Image (cartoon, rainbow, N blue to C red; front, top):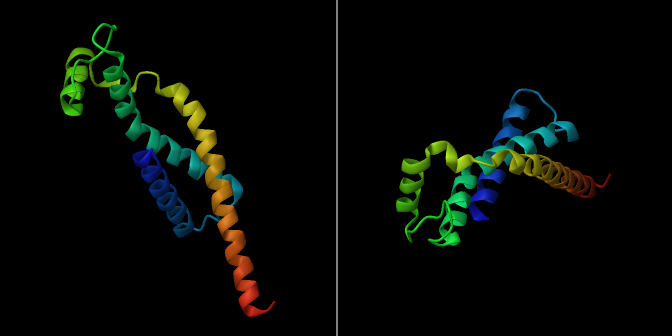
Length: 127
């Protein structure tokens, strides 16, 4: 959870700032796209670790299972036996879930923060 949220929030901030530097207003549509791209980035970083975790939990009798208690040894074993791409097998359905979820969350979060910032400025200025 922690690596996913860290990559997600960092990506949202970087993409939002990049858009702002290029004169793109943070409209809900832009924030939806920013959140979707952040979701892709976060899931791409975390997904191989999830694949390894699941394989290690299966136990030695299951097909495709890994017998190792060390992450790097398990990673090396999977890549040697099945190739690097096997760490990302099944990621497309995960993207189908993550893109809209993170897009909506980013839109709501950033829009809410912007609303309250504007309300605070109005309250401070007395308007």
